[in-house]
Length: 486
Image (cartoon, rainbow, N blue to C red; front, side, top):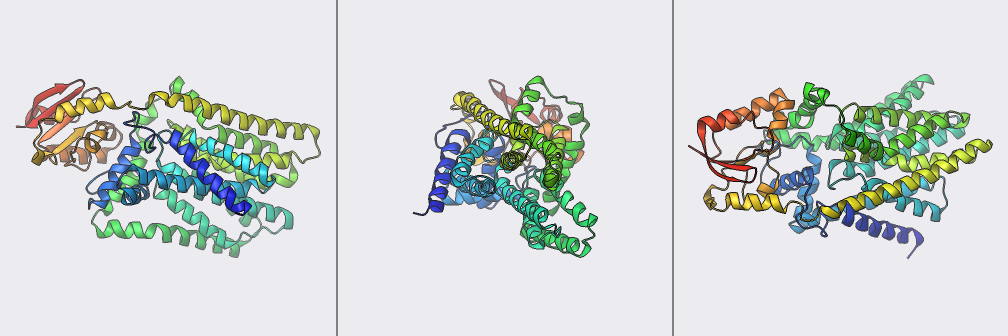
């Protein structure tokens, strides 16, 4: 076996080990884990896409269709979440191979390999439940960062500012991948590309700039075109656009979200989760002092600033930080470059920075691993309540059910299917988007659901009039109420 093949095998097994511990929504090590939401929805959407349901039209969620397609492929492989786990391993192992390529720009093979293993920890400690949209984008983001580094290195060494148009195709595909997941994942890449555009314009490379723009758009269009065609053909065009873009714009601009401040816990979480962003910002600022590395500094400063500002302007979730994962490898590579400067102070600063970033990453990962001890069987109480609530429901009426503010376990573990496309998190969605609220009220007032399970622990303002006028309470278990249509 060659050394390259051995490294690939090592990264594959390391990716498997990391995901077994940290991706508790799909890992075979966890049974009935608590704290799951998004991953369960993605698996539910993917599985039912295989069974003929059309995303957004029949089952609605506000993420792009690519994550549902990946989960559908996973269920097609094995019929359960193990197939999704296998695809996660392939995705992470690919990302690690690409991270190794970038690290090899500055480090010897053995050092680059060890740092790649640490880089995996920098990703998995912010993946939360696992199988979230961000993690499937990181191979593409890492590839794009490596190509940007190579361009900046060539431009700095040869004084040729032209940017190969073929690379822009990769950036376009990467942006398309992010757009079909959650568009804001590409914000950091867009910041870096703004520097490329500015550099070409400054040097009046108009023809090269136009060629790059054309190739970027070509890559973007080629990737998203099949999705656009599918949803146009299935009559779910409007639902697709609203779910993927419209609702998320409503979400980010909602007065409800603007009025919600960050709690002390969220501030602490943001400080820990966005370590790679802060490290990249600090390294880029130091790089500005190194005249021969200012193009690199501009690239990474713009990328980190845009991504950090975008996510911190709202209420950042830890898993959003996966989009900043390439910054871990970039920061180490650039610190290695700074360590070769003549200034003794800069060299010391670079070595201290590398040690601090590695140690903080390992410590944060260890802390995250410890916090997962209580996850296993964490949903057993909720599922016991669901089972008691639904045990007398006739089999032929289990497709005439909808949960209101209930977890996805209601459907995935208890043999029921929602009869409305809006099947979870309804109250939150109604508060964030007027169009969502109108769609929700239309479905509720249709009275298509014979049975409604309501989680009374959360606010239920929008469904209360419907329940009062058209449904009767038949059973209560813990904080869950079961209503039957009159």
